[in-house]
Image (cartoon, rainbow, N blue to C red):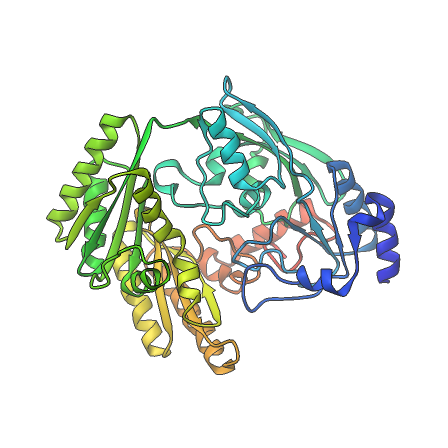
Length: 458
């Protein structure tokens, strides 16, 4: 069976772009999500939409599962081949096709790394706003498939806010183009939005047209330390209520502050209960005024200390404190399980308090950091991978955390996606009728059920 599959795929893309070797299969049996793995039968690297179409026509005819994959940096087990079959790696589709200053857009193949797109936009004096934490390795296609968020989400929104059009291949082999180069286009169902966040279950995205913005004149960053996260949460509410929408409004709890400081030595205050990282961009006078106002608000809400970065180097160091939270925590144990829930902004402190209660009840180390401005939290459990009983307690704890988020009018994922990791909790979030509707949509696109089975709609 494997030999037949390899021969068929080699006939489409060339034998040099197909692998059935154990090492290559093992490397694609998992993504960045711990505790999930499953071996595929073959790994294939197509070089065009037409090759993707031929692969999908073959897979549909033969009933072979296909899992689309970019860099594999997702944190929801979205690209784990649960049912074997083909892992379809799209990183050969890595060309930036166009950057248009006049139209404020770019066209890219979906294997382009997010940071590469951002750099090309910057060279043209433009900004690609989506800024996921994995931007140096994650691909545009993966960002679209999971509707990735990031540090600039409060002010600029998430990936879906910038996707104007897509080229996508249906499981039955048709190549379609949704949307286009226009901000305003309501011809037909909005398939662009439907495919954005569909996690590779409806079609394989091979090209994206994305909106760009004028590059801000300047940026500024500051940090505020608070006795407790409740104090920091009140400051966040006060900042937004004042009419300021910062480009960045991030938080670390005390456990994260200690881990980051030990890891990076950035001079963070280890005696603080919470750290609030804030930043803005735009015209220099507006940025200066907004940062001064945020500093004033934080001081009024009981901040222990508020400091504005004096130069770009210090600002980059503060942003690095937020970005290195996960690697810093990873040094505390051999296994790090990073999760993702969202609640209304004013319930951020209540959610963190509930996470701490659940962690204590299950005797686990769970630290929390995230996007304070939009209520998106990343509770992170650190444990020993050889301790099966602790791993089971970790699963139980996160099930309770997801339920707690829903009880606070929140959701089980704000930006990582559902994948295999969150699928058991999806019905609790959406309800049975809506989950059934997802299944009907899935079958309309993928009647043979070959695309990323065991995920959304399956």
